[in-house]
Structures are given as structure tokens and as C-alpha cells.
Length: 459
Ligand code: HEC
Ligand code: HEC
Ligand code: HEC
Image (cartoon, rainbow, N blue to C red):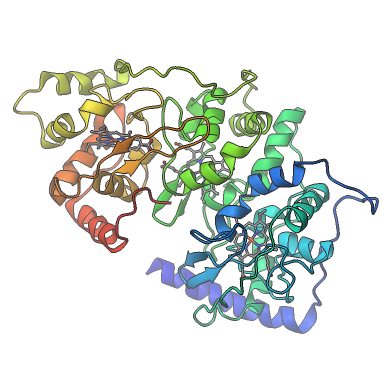
């Protein structure tokens, strides 16, 4: 109900602003934020690197389709938004575009026909990119991507969201402040990390909360809610900032390793984050990954930690289980006792999960993720955790960690009340502190999971 109300209010506000916008103010594209000689050319490889950080491929490539040829559907509560063809095809792509048109799309959210783009295209974030990165990216798209003729289906959302001019008014609310990147008080590495995180990396698109009118609440460091946690589809994108943020307890090297490989000693990337690592982060240079990790770990004034020159070097991985730490002692002892009067959740864990995640709940670094302090286990909304127990998961394969690990799903073996008891046990074991999970919540998730036909890995 609250959601409907906020949408309703948003629509009314939008309507009023849209009317004013259309009547009084002509559209002015944002000018380039750096001056350039006309013959400027980016150094080889730069455009592709920018594309990787921006993750254009993930949204602009259909499943099994040609790179960047569009027709991938982005689901929204108002209907499906079809991503455009951004190959250099002259008829159906951006082959005839000028740099000014491209900048308008990336910075102001204006498409090739002068139409307002839906913010499913993350121009809320790309607007902080420098002109040189935009030029390098445009050049890459025009000269290194294969032109593909593909007419993308028109997006037709339900009324009133089908009226694209309303987005003009929405932009006034959503795009707070000027698009110029504002460097923090820090060294070059921190500032580079800030730039990548706020701009092309568009981390806030998922890791910042949303306002009542569905804009990103916090797109840059100076915004209070920036990276304080959000929801995407049915996944929690954990807070990356603040005292409860799990990654603030990881070393900077561990944060960088998670981005480079999708795993570290504490967690693995699932759901939407697996896709971000697969298509974007793992392809970035070590120095940029380190810069982002350093920024994430120092954005509220913490000291910079040293990070080794090479990240996540290959080498033998240890399968040794880690012992329980102090907070985990009592739970580990309970599980080890294997007593017949153990509570149901603990018994189910011992029977089904302990073989891999161990009685310590610490798993085994980079192989079986730690469940103690794990953001997915502790999520405010337990649905992603429940879905994972029901569905199972398969490891994300990255260049540096071509793992092939599977966790089976438990949908056929455990009842709703058993899954609820197990999930509650995880959320309270080893010093974890999160709310209980109810049987009815599990049955809701089970229905949802069945409807989505249980993909192997949810991305
Ligand atoms: C999260 C998904 C997402 C990502 C990431 C993304 N886009 Fe988009 N983009 C879209 C969608 C959806 C549209 C169509 C929006 C509409 O129809 O209003 C779009 C539209 C565009 C357009 C306008 C095309 C036209 O014909 O008007 C351009 C140009 C574009 N994107 C470039 C890029 C580039 C370059 C990147 C990478 C830096 C990128 N996009 C990353 C989702 C995305
Ligand atoms: C499309 C949505 C999306 C985008 C964009 C995104 N993330 Fe994530 N991220 C998630 C989700 C969902 C999770 C939780 C994954 C899980 O539970 O396994 C996550 C998890 C993480 C984690 C681990 C947090 C923890 O507590 O375990 C880190 C670190 C992270 N993201 C960093 C980033 C950075 C840096 C960026 C920008 C380059 C980014 N993410 C962009 C959705 C996203
Ligand atoms: C055969 C070994 C195995 C068993 C048994 C197993 N898991 Fe897992 N589990 C894994 C692996 C491997 C992953 C990580 C997959 C990946 O790399 O994405 C994982 C991931 C997870 C995650 C996600 C953690 C994160 O950081 O995103 C949770 C939660 C989890 N398991 C809970 C359980 C529970 C609860 C049980 C018992 C019902 C269980 N597992 C049984 C191997 C196992």
C-alpha cells in the first residue's frame, strides 16, 4: 500500500512539474566538461576499459544476442524497458550519431530521437564521467564494435509512464546538483576510486536506496545515503558504507579481491552482483580495482591501507575449515555436541549444511562462503537467503577463479517450516543478529521461485 501511495504521489508531482517544464523551459544540453582539441584521440584500449567499468554490455546485449545490439528487456514495476541498439549500425544503431548526441544520452538522458530516456539507463551516474572518458567510449563504440542491424521493439509502459516527457520533470527532482565530478579530499588513488564508483561504475544504482519517486537516493560521496544499501529485483545490495557495512570489516585487499574474482575469504557474489563481476569488474585493471576498494574503505575518512601490487594471484587454495572465533564458539559447540535435543534449525544445519560450511560457520576461504556475518544471511529482507536455500547456487566463474562449485537446492528436501527454522538459525547463530524467518515468508518465496522457474544462478 505504501508503495502504491508513493507512486501515486510521485505521479501527481510529476504531472504538475511536467506541465510547467513543457510550458516554460526549453531543453539545454549539458556542455562538455573539459575542452578538447578536435584531433584528440584516446590512447588504445581506453574506450574498451571505460565500457567495461560502465558495464554497457550487460544491459545492451540480449541473452545469446550480438554484443551491444540491444533488445535486452529490463524489468521495471511499470513494464519492460527494451535496451537500445548501440552498435555503429547507421539505421538501427548509433552509427550516425555525433559526440554531442552521445553526450546528451549519457549525461542528460536524451535518446537519438530527442526522446527522454528512462532512467533504467543509468545516466543518473554516467553524468559524472569526464568528457575524455565519454569520447574514448564513443570512439570505441563507433570503431571497435561490430555494426548489427537490429530494430529494437518500442518500449510501451502503462499510463502514465508511457509519457516520456514526464521524465523531464522527474530529472529535475532526481538529478540533484550539477554533473561536474567533485573530488574528495584525498590522494590520487582515492579520487580515482571515487570517480569510478560514482560515475561509470554506477554502484549507487543498486547500492543506494531509492526515493519515493524511485530516483537513486545518493549518487555521490557528499550525499548522506550514498551506498547505504538498496534492493534490486529480489536481492539486497548491502550497504557498503557505515558502521554496519560488512565490507568495512574486510581488508582493502579483500574488497578488491571480491571485485576481481567474485569471491574472497568471506563471501561470494550472487545474483545481480555476479553479473556485475562477470561482465564488468573482473575485466578492470588491478590499479583501478584497488583504487575503488581504497575509496570504498576510506570514504568516511578512514586511513588508507596498503594493498599488494597484484590482486588475487593464482595459487593453491586451502580447503581447510577455519576454527570458530569467539563469537561463534557457543554455536559451534552446540553443533559439535550433535545432541538429539538440539533445536530444529541447528539439527537441519548439521544434517544438510555443515559438511561444506562447517560447524564454525566460517566455511573455507574462497571455496565455501562464511555464514557468520555474511551480508546475505543477515539481510534486512531474508527473502534472498530463503530463495538461495530453496534454489541452491552455482559458483560464478571468473578468469582468475575458474571455479566450478555447486550448492544444490533444498526445495525438494525441506518443508517451509524447516526452511524457516534453518534460516532463523543462520540469522542468529555464531553471534549473527537478524530477525526470525516465518513459515509464511518461506512459502511466499517458494511460490515466487517456482514462478521464476529456478535459474541455476539468479542473474
Ligand atoms: C542497467 C542497464 C543499462 C546499462 C548498464 C547501460 N544502459 Fe544504455 N540504455 C539502457 C536502456 C534500458 C536504454 C533505453 C532507455 C529508453 O528506451 O528510454 C538505454 C539507452 C541508451 C542509449 C540511447 C540510445 C538511443 O537510441 O536513443 C545510449 C546511447 C546508451 N544507452 C548507451 C549506453 C552506454 C555507452 C553504456 C555503458 C557505459 C550503457 N548505455 C549502459 C540500459 C542500460
Ligand atoms: C545491478 C545491481 C548492482 C550494481 C550495479 C552493483 N552491485 Fe554490488 N551488489 C549487488 C548485490 C545484489 C549484492 C549482494 C550479492 C550477494 O548477496 O551475493 C552486491 C554485493 C556487493 C559487495 C559485497 C557486499 C557484502 O556485504 O557482502 C560489494 C563489495 C559490492 N557489491 C560492490 C559493488 C561496487 C563497487 C559496485 C560498482 C562498481 C557495485 N557493487 C555495483 C548489486 C549490485
Ligand atoms: C556441497 C557443499 C554445500 C552444501 C552441502 C551447502 N552449501 Fe551453501 N554454498 C556452497 C557453495 C560452494 C557456495 C558458494 C557458491 C558460489 O561460489 O557462488 C554456497 C553458498 C551459500 C550461501 C551464500 C553465501 C554468500 O556469500 O552469498 C549461503 C547463505 C549458503 N550457501 C547456505 C547454505 C545452507 C543453509 C546449506 C544447508 C541447507 C548449505 N549452504 C549447504 C556449498 C554448499
